[in-house]
Image 1 (cartoon, rainbow, N blue to C red):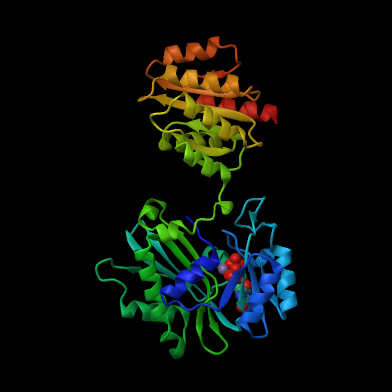
Image 2: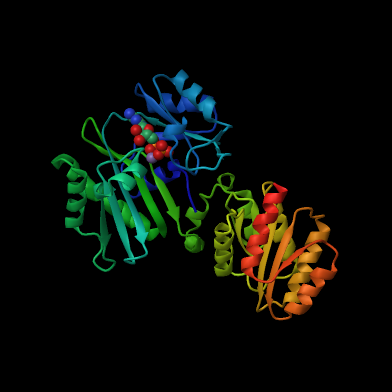
Length: 389
Ligand code: GDP
Ligand code: MN
């Protein structure tokens, strides 16, 4: 689960990671009020969405007086912000964070994440932080250092000095770094995070280190242990289809192509998407209907796939192991008939009672296209989708 920057900054404060003073506002008038309450002579208005790269998309704006704060807030609020980290529709801006502007001397990158390869938490740091960190990673990866933390030993003081050296910190800033690193480490462990990213961590003109931005991801499987974190969920930032799928115990992820995929088993679903790609197509989604699926679930799965207007063909790939193929076939027929499906549906069935299942599809008169194997199924789906398009 993701949270907003302002929520991350509130958590940072609890764990001793310094952030600029600020508050949220849900309308332009309140944004101006926040600026007045904060005092000072410059503020930054920041659109709160579950995506980064807002700076380059007009979602982070400097204001010199309260009227300008209100103007920026009015521009952002109630609209969708598209950044290169969102899809083409962007995400809704329902609130802005207004903070006192910082005079930046240096921008650094600092994050803590779970490195699955070394099975350790890993600090990732770079002196070249800020809005172009992706380019740094691609072009000059040697500018990024990685410091793994041994789970038994915990974060060591010398590792803090290593990170400080990599960032090129002065003495005065080096002294401030351990509190930030320890705060991140403690927050990560106590709230079951999967990533904490501060980009940029800044050094201000008067020598202070501050987390100017904050991004935290949490392990969904641990949310039941952290009701305070679960309460930070903002459904408006999540794909409504993915949320609906969760209700029906379906594993669904939107991908943007035009071939809807309905598969049982996550591994088979991955293989199916690979085959679609191999044949020159693009999957519209990942969908695992689960091992013990039934007629209703198959129908819900079809509904989800078809609610995506870009789908031009559906590829059903089911291995009837726990569920028998004739049961699946009945589910597919019911769904197709109920929903008056007009786009091509390619079905590859394999497993227990496959002959009965295929015969049911063939005799249905619903114009389904059975395939003999996955190779042929993917080929057919890609071809039919192109014809429809
Ligand atoms: P992101 O683009 O979504 O990652 O949003 P950030 O919060 O990281 O802001 C983007 C960029 O805006 C930062 O890298 C800074 O260069 C700039 N910025 C944000 N806040 C301030 C501020 O208080 N003062 C100054 N001078 N620049 C800021
Ligand atoms: Mn940022």
